[in-house]
Amino acid sequence: MNERYVISPARSKIGFEASSSVHPIHGEADGVSGFVDAAVVGGRVDLSAEPRMRVELPAERLRSGNPLYDGELRRRIDVRAYPRVTGEATEVEELTGTGRYRVQGDLTFHGVTRPVEGEITVSAPDDRTLLIEGEQIFDVRDFGLQPPKMLMLRVHPQVRVRVRIVAEREP
Image (cartoon, rainbow, N blue to C red; front, side):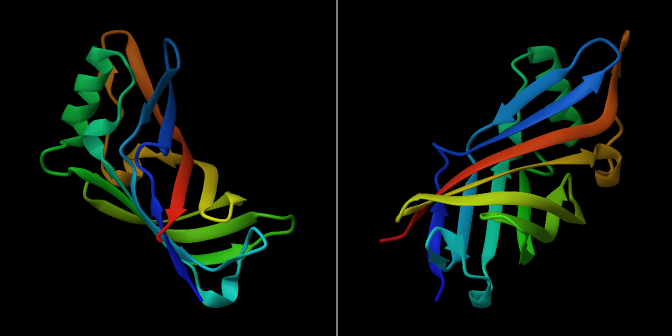
């Protein structure tokens, strides 16, 4: 039977890395929210209970630490029109090796929803907490965005996204 684990915004992070003609651009976002519905037995997800997961991120929380880049990012994303990035798992399959899973689902960014697939690791550091980690490379053009070009800087369209989600079981 599934139990609900609520994502801890204070303990969860999403990081991103893009390359450019000048240097890499690194950033992260906090404020991740959502839930995981899963049955966890012995630190592993019981797939017979059909786990579900939904992750939400306020788009305005994406930051590189560089005010020029951050302003351009918010302008291109149009955070007023598209305030949230959401991801929802639709299928989960266990891979060989403890705690590794292939996840399929939908990602909505900049008002565009695309099917996505990737690998995650899930561990249970204690009986009340799930730690979910993974990374995936996305092409921003798939979501209707053109990479920025500013002076000599050209940002490449592929962005590596890393997730570290901590979810705590509801009492």
